[in-house]
Length: 305
Image (cartoon, rainbow, N blue to C red; front, side, top):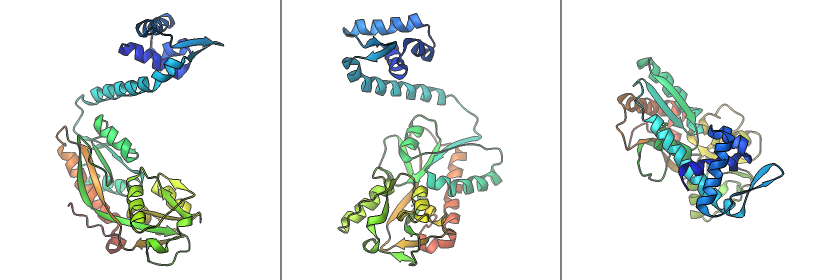
């Protein structure tokens, strides 16, 4: 199959009709039909059957569909990369961050950076770590901020400082909490695909503890909001926990400390612009400010390691 065949098949998979697929491809309906027929001739079997006015994939087409989707996504990523390699003005920062840092640290960092760099333009995305890495690889992002990640080819991770996990629960009156004394039956869990979710799971298993959360979330802020509503207890990062310090919840440091690193991510395939390097320093300072009222408890040093 040629690339144009793959695009045509993907369009029909999405729309279920030649006319709509043709509009998606930006070609005439006869041209789209010709592409599908040519693909079928090259393959030696039919890809679609017309049933009640719709094109329904054959069994062979259904088997091909996941691979077609995979190639199509790679093509889209290649197109985006080509577009993003066009030189842009140096006065712009395209940054991404996980939600917990977007709600707390990033606004503070931008406010601080604007004082010394008033002409900088910003594009800010709040995404989960896997999406941030994809954005850096396709050159859609200049910088990304998250917590501990596994090493990634082509991505440099600069450690900005340590932080730790906190326990949040309505009507919890202690300042410290051991994992063994936390009610694990109503613990609001973090997805195991999440870096802190994996970290917490390892610590629980190390202590021979089992948690079977009735509620699992992907965003730490939602976990805290559920805890505030009395839906259970949550174990989250220090930044999210501190954003709830004025709410009607108890916030306790996990004892012994469960630490992790705050990191800045950027592409290892190109030189990081000077203004982006300077912004990392501003972000690092904002991390320290964000936790200043609880700096000793949170354990954030504000120094790169």
